[in-house]
Image (tube, rainbow, N blue to C red):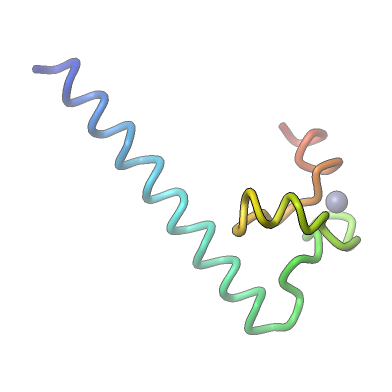
Amino acid sequence: MSQLWSQVSGVLDGAVRELDELDAALARWARGDYGICSRCERAIDPARLEARPAAALCIDCARLVG
Ligand SMILES: [Zn+2]
């Protein structure tokens, strides 16, 4: 029971985080800087955006911040 709950709440946590990320991505889209790394301001690799549409960081910065 508690193990199932921790699995469910883990999935929910992930979903909420994804929604937050998508929300932020939409805000960037509205500002016209979607696809631009929010740290180094270089263009994010389109292949990365395809895999993670809500990515706010380029792959180099994502690696640096973890
Ligand atoms: Zn970057």
